[in-house]
Amino acid sequence: MGIPVWSNEVKRRNIAPMAQDQRRQIPRGSRALHWVLVGALSWLAACSTAVHLSQPPNLYLDGRNYPDALVPAALKVIDPPIFYVTDRNVLAEGGQVAGYGTGRSDSMGFGLAHVRFGATDWSDLVARTHVDRGGHISTLKVEALQELVRFSDVPLPVVRKQGTLHFSPAAVSAYAGKAAAFQQAVRREISRTGNRRVLIYVHGIRNNFENAVQTLASLWHFSGRRSTPVVFSWPAGNHGVLGYFRDREAGDFSVYHAKEMLRLIAEIPEVEDIDIVAHSRGTSVMTQALREMVIFNRGRGLAPKQAMKTGVLILAAPDLDTGLVRQRLLSERFSEGFEQVNIYINPDDVVLKLSSLLTNSSRIGAAQKEDFKPGELKDLRKQGLIHFIRVEGASGSDSHSYFRNNPAVLSDMVLVLRTRAFPGGSLRPLEADPDTIWRLHHDYPLDRLPNLALERGR
Image (cartoon, rainbow, N blue to C red; front, side):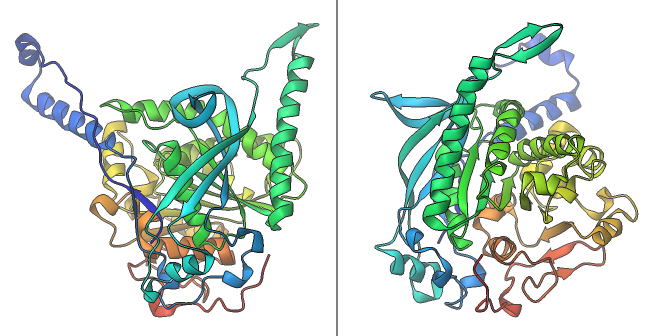
């Protein structure tokens, strides 16, 4: 078993009833809509920190295909380290970092999270990864945190000289020292493991710090442990009826720090590619950061992909306004900054339907054919960089978190990260609907299971 899924755990608040004269002033239809919206907000705010582990990818159901022989020797352990970058507030105990909360921090923290999978040793973990061998990964715990670098608060102080603003040289020097320590830690891990590809995961709303680490640890393990994993955790997890909107604002707050993380990693000479997986509202945090970097590098006269070292981008159940995607991403030729962009959509996504109701705009993660302009999908297919994948059979509690607990979706994500294959071929046997959206059925890819025995190391 593997990818964490969060069940509902609502923190209730007492809300004072409206005065009788106030109720009289609201038309009956408006009162009904009012309570529908309150219920929707409460439902959106209901996520938990309880972790449940689901089945591994269908890709591994027959007892083969997990790349055990290609996993670096240093990573054949059940308690690997996972890097993290966060601008959450620090929770300290006895002068030590014990965790990170939902508050915002003007400085980034960078460190290592030590996780432990529920297995006795590496061989046992590999056996449990193949469910037909009678095992399962029963637990995945974050056992310890080690903050390695605490960056300076931003914005850095500035001085004005001859009508222009300059950052304080002393502040720039101090920040550069922190950045160098960050980069050196990543370089040491690359030297230890040989993994020159970085895998970044960005969570959605109402996820706490530990949830994010566990999710990436699972995805990284199932994709073969042939990358250096980094969680970017922003201050999500606000409670109450307005928690959804507070989390959205917190995501906007974190865009600058996301850009800094991406810049610092791309500047490491040993890093070859940076793959990114973002879920739900985390897709907004990351696409805003990436879009600004694309524009910045074009302004420098550089090809964005080469400058950013970006590889595969995966947007799972993206909580993004469909119109904004068209105006701010497609219009900026955003996709040319990547090897490919995979967007997993589910028209039955309950969370995104509620988000559409609250924001009065359609969400790309729940898009249907009618949400696209005539010929738009065919034009995107011709460009060959953006792939829309419609998830079938994901409903109810699985309708929004399917990338973490749906063995079919997880299989396709693993195939993307392992093989770099585009949809439709023998390595990634998705089928196309007449509307040119790729279809991912619930038992994918069992009827056309690819043979990855000849997969090369990288």
